[in-house]
Picture 1 (cartoon, rainbow, N blue to C red):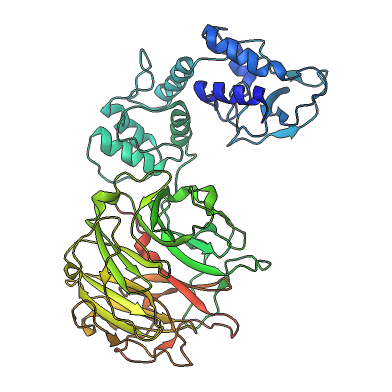
Picture 2: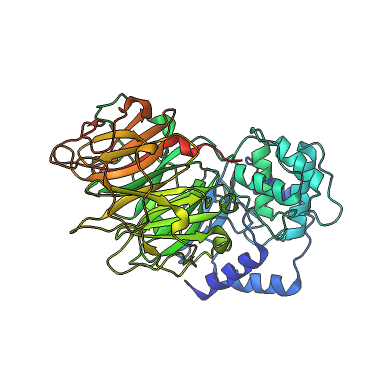
Length: 531
């Protein structure tokens, strides 16, 4: 990157110039007509002029990073290819435009005066006033700006939430609660706990779009798929047709992909994802930031979404609208360790992640679940052994602890998963094997034992069934998505799977090819929105 580009980048960061149009169809000609031509502060203007001094605005340019941008109007703009906005401040992220490396003929297109420095750029304060004026015109209850255009009263926050065309539950009328719910439904608005009544300019643009029905985060469940090339993607559950038991499913990966599916989970795009990795770290990510794809398209590298090390990869995921909804996070590892940690210890997750658990070199996470301190823990192994014990048997520990032994493993057996059982609710344990067989068993059939026992046999893992692939706690009204290593997915109702006792063979759930195996299943109904 050249010195001139670095200087310009610094100035753009200072001015936060990412877009000043309040109308998605607006072009900079409208902005120029409305400009008061008020100069920037002298020192900022001087630095801006110095930064763009190396750009040749006339004829061809030697600057390989410079692009000429054409929107709807007969005007061309300037941008660097590493910026998402033009020099004049138009945010291009949600716009369609044409780009060229060659300067257009001025006989056909006029140069944007703001991009070329012939008129001054609006200050942040002016942009906020314009955006606030637009919101006051479109939303009853929002007042026109006088001072501090970025600040809203609690009543104005309530009016904003009401104006966004989505169904919202009854919420507490407080700035924190209203801001939380606005951030959950509008893409581009953060959940600020320090200044809940203030919005950045880009967030006010997002609010204007949302009032018009755009940039609204869907609430329908999505299937998230993680593959061995460290790519992740999401697809709406409703794009998967419900099938009956014993079906082959449909492909949810590219036919050209040679990368295996490792795991999947179902989540509400409005919720947060808590991503636990091979280094024992946890990262927090808004679910909707994982790109939606067609079911056979490739996902995006997870390293583009969270700041992982080169040797770090995803191992388990928990999802919630707010981490404070739950009392504990309960961890289960492949080597049979279990640990409970209070969720309050995860209230401030840095962008670079924080330690969640200590993992031995030969160990990895295979289950992370929410618990309330009054439930029981179920652990299942590849060989079909299971153990159930009170979660209080594992005392709460800090984030850096490894945990205590939850189950004794024989030979080279490994834990594949687990679940949290509410002792007051009659549910079933759903167990599926790699060859596509499985069963439901009433939770009452899993008697309580003490932690660190050998457990009881849950399901046969002989040749017909193969090893256990996954386990979960379900009720008959739920649906699941079972996924194979080669990307075949079957979406089906839980009540089509037979209820049997422990130590049984189960029935065929999915028709899995000989050169494939079932690797995971997700409970779809757990994605229901939690308010």
